[in-house]
Image (tube, rainbow, N blue to C red; front, side):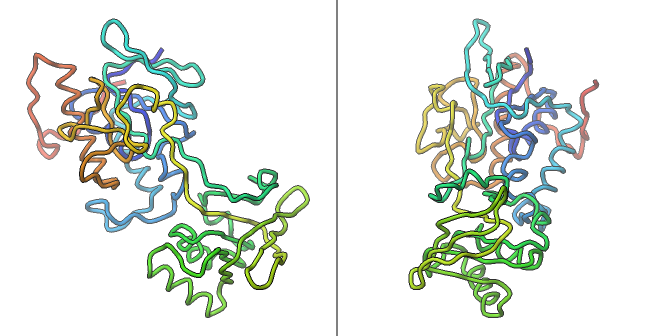
Length: 336
């Protein structure tokens, strides 16, 4: 049984920053995440991609931002339950909540902060009959470490920002890069489209439009893909890796059954402090929704800050909280 002041569901950037803000007012936090390591999407999907809109950091790799957030939270000694999915919630007689994971780990806290990003997400997979046979054997749906593809032949499929960005990035790392898209037009940023076109014209990558990957072949690992084009029919292309980047399908998962007000896969909140319709449960970051909502990390940091203030007042109804600037009081962590 794990007991804490604030139980945070989701160990992404917003969840990690909540630990820091809570620590400043001497509240302890414990985080639950389905992923095996902290960082959420920043760690799982694009650790090597730069982020440009974190105040005071002109650019920082997503993985480095997670590292910094963990360092910032470290003095407050957060606990982690990783690699487990939050399943059920129960209101106890004393007013606290008991949250149980899919592996049976029980957590008790008076305040819950849902910071689950997009929720549970799964990659959208192309309809290739034997694709499961080559998963982790040459088929990847997420690029975590570009160095994994150094000097390899890579076929990327997709027409959005991820497909375009990784085509550009891997051109300097992989031996060969081919981008396959079913249309002539792309959905990504215009400057990325232009860059891909320039690389194709310079023969630094191979670009095939109005085409789809329809088959995979290999003995124990991926060795080739079958590409079906609109004008030339099917052809076989040797490759070491096939990376279909068709986006992610977000789902709230078991949280959707908790009695929260939900609108289009997001949790409705009051912008006063990002409380939900259930007292004691808050939602911050990409998982919440309200008029004017922007799904930006910096907005999630703001939401976490206001949420913690209300959490402290809930836990200390007879006390007055005085805002103290860290430049004045410093950062005092917890003793072991």
